[in-house]
Image (cartoon, rainbow, N blue to C red; front, side, top):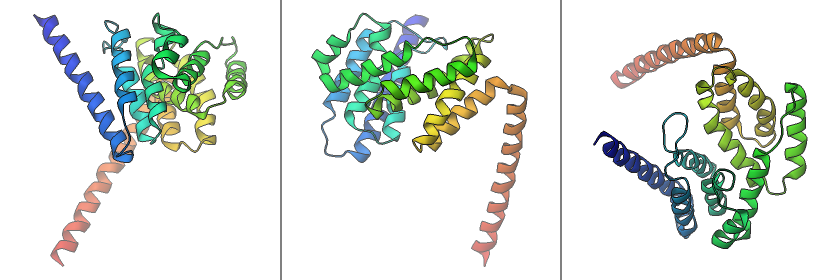
Length: 236
């Protein structure tokens, strides 16, 4: 019974997140047909069914998070559909040819590009690794949406480093090293900041908590000051 209730709760959460995604897309593409996104969601749901992330969430939560970040960046429906599908070739029996048949060459090309990035072999040296990845990513990409999807993907996968205590710091340093410059060059300050915060949290958790507490203290002081000023203005 508990398992059934958990399954129902998971389904409700997934559907809610997908509806939120559609609302975000409609906010800047009011008249556009969103059937491609709906089809990609259903396809991803079907092929990721029964799999979960290390956090315990259903795996579909991850592509939904990626697609939501892309929607916040106001990308087109093709990119968002590819975001929902970006892991199916690597993690399931689906092939690039299957994606081409179901969604067309453009979506398949983007998904294939993201899959190629995931297959990059890391060097033993972190500095060499970061430089090799920079060169390979820049050399292989002919559609900027591939890079944007990969950056959104890393925003949602840095946090689970906490489930790998031995490798978390190494992964965070590597991700920060080769992803942050791309965010900076593309003018993606928000994603760059999120990646830096996530990496900082695992590379140096003590300093991270100190900075976090200091910021929270300043925030509360600022809110108290603004509240006081607002009261004075309202009374005058």
